[in-house]
Image (cartoon, rainbow, N blue to C red; front, side):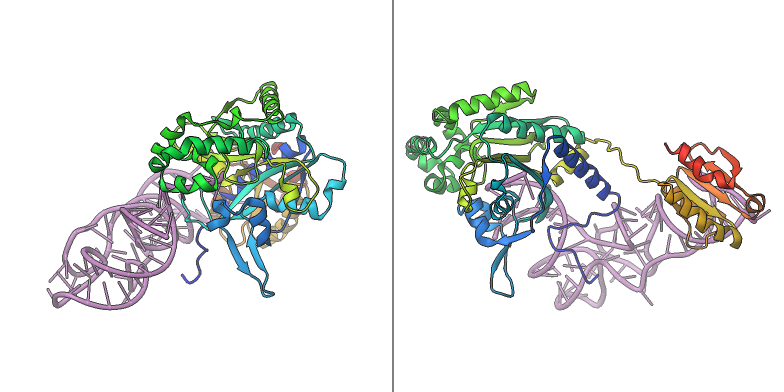
Length: 419
RNA sequence: GCGGCCAUGGCGAAGUGGUUAACGCACCGGAUUGUGGCUCCGGCAUUCGUGGGUUCGACUCCCACUGGUCGCCCCA
């Protein structure tokens, strides 16, 4: 085998791709109901967009970007996430000139250079939404609600919403100072990563999985205890709205998202129980539009990992309502019948029915087998005898029942039974 | 970037140093001359990821490489 698929990527083949279509359809339908419009941006952008947007100190920028130079010497990067691109597009196309809010969604591939493993690919797919132009807490709640409903719509159970507020540029420094003061005496007990985080991004120590770090941070200052008179009430309103929307959530004061742009509301969708993990997450990013060169504009959004959703559906053994069989498989016997079959097949398809036939000159038995394999609901048999009488036999493959009908009634017949 | 495990036909999978590489599924043909799903019969790997080494002899042992997979870090 000479050519192989690049590491961390995958071909979505028939049998699997239908599940993707199903899940994507759920996302689109939900977005339609919540009145979001789709936006499609390029899969690559100037490298600096992500450096600025996602944050220089994030793992994504530090070690996971798919960066390359084009023939003109420009540094480009395959998008590691969707928000930065959407914000760039929002600013570049001056969508802020439209009446706010601007509500957008996207579905597409993202790229991160990492070691592939369960639920982690180098090319993976996200469905995400963004709302620009309002700080209204109800919007925060609606965004979370939309994400939550999406999982439910696909058939997933036990999805939990973890919620936190990470404050704003006004309250965060105060918390940061308190946190550093609290942690510094324990510096030696922290893991290596956290020791460096202490200076660079101390808040991240709060969600370190290391046991020792976890123990130390147990009594550490929480961000929500430091929220300013703007962020505090905002957070309370978000929680209140979530209750009205009947979205079950759990305040997790350790939740700190990995991207630098988040302010105030931060949330994550996680799967309960063993093998649980993050299915998606998001938050508010009130400074990002400005950071990318636009006017001061609040924003909020989330992104969900579609691979992880599919994986969870698999794990929970959710039966997706996928239909893959054809309505009618046409079996013909003899040259004349075969010729007539060409027209018949066309008529079935024109009527909106899915129809298939044999193209390998198989004998009747072979054609019947092919019909079975195509998971045909019905088989229409047209032989010399039937043709002579202007009739066709129709067989229900599930029941084995068979009857003979007028040839020109075939399309109507199949249409009636296919409803 | 680090670590564990793995690599045999289209797929799944036995074989763990001695010369026919099991078996199951799928596929093709036949029993059934115009009826699938069940049954029976037959067909289907000069070859065991790649390269090197040990040996009289390697799918089986050793090394390297490549790839896959799972985990760590982090995240979707």
